[in-house]
Image 1 (cartoon, rainbow, N blue to C red):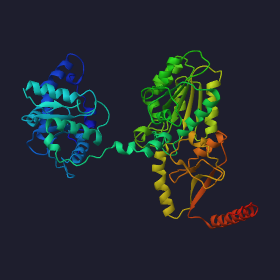
Image 2: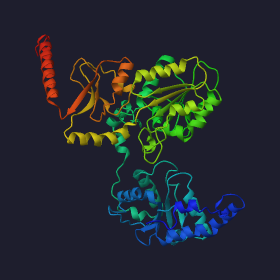
Image 3: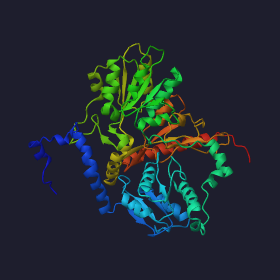
Image 4: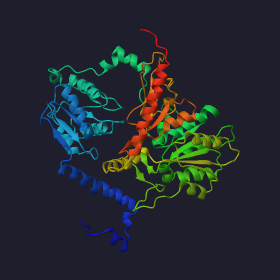
Length: 517
């Protein structure tokens, strides 16, 4: 429906209203209006539209008051205690606050009146709603006991086991008869207490959050680890974004973290003469958000002799893949393709290097090493560019599938590990951490450790092989081309190669020394 008054009309017919400007004394009137008119209007809206909900019996000795987001977990806990069924029918009265602010005093008083006790199920600290309930009850002279953080944790997630424990403690004190027919509650710690699980936990580390399969940021930090091995550790100032995962294993890089685009700004504290330079990392989203001024501009102005890596993956990837000023795609509603390199040079940076393919680990390593060792003073800026693999796959996969369906010859690169060559030292995994790179057991009796393996989630970015080559690890990685809708030439070459490989295999087998069983 077209609005009765459009933005175009508003722009063409400007109206000046001092009441819409937050400036004293008008702002004092805003506060008075909020308390006398707007707040009561919001409360009335919540009540009229019944945004908060009541479940269970209308009467009861005890009741639960909970935030709307905790409803499912609370119902699951009640099911375990035999006080609710799978259809959401509760034996205990529930007041579910889908709107936690403002509180609806009349609804809370009506729910609590006549009850011996209520339990406030509220995540987070401090217990804001619980404190408000105490104040409300005392002012209205309601003697209902209010429990909350005395039985539930002050912090952490309210999972079903946590709620079972809290609800049990609440009911044992205030309504023990409700627990008389409860079924056995499964002990969530039983599995963790199993000796086999304990033994496994001692040798298998918890899987940390990490980069997506094929992420172009992974080779940046692989290169950084290679430089660290040669030049020693440096202070690394991290930033908000996907690249923050580099702080976790297997990279374990990063000493500090600040706000969006403020990583290099925080490193300005190390603007001193020293034998080592600081390294800062920020993404293209953070760069355009405020990093251009607060980080790069600040470094140029103060002649900061540090290294800044700007991770340019073409999108604000951490928030869903929105376009930013330097995105490479043509956006009909935005002006994209604005160069980060030109922007930093435009505010005075002189040592600027562009790497347009971050998967080139050797180039990344050499450029970073040059930035850390050059005699040139002032900020050193490395713009490391490659498209976010998650967004790329979202774009490319439908195109590839359509082309295959249409009968076009399409080639997909896949990588693998030759288990006969792999020694099982797993250095490739320690320098990559790709989710598609794993291990598997081999039948070779001369190998004690499992060998590296690449699963079907591989997107063919080539990072594992690049890392292996840059680190001079081993030649066990290989690339295979999977051809869809092959031509006659493809089929002929396949038969020819297969014949040569079979001949070589037979020749090798014929010269093997075989011991009798």
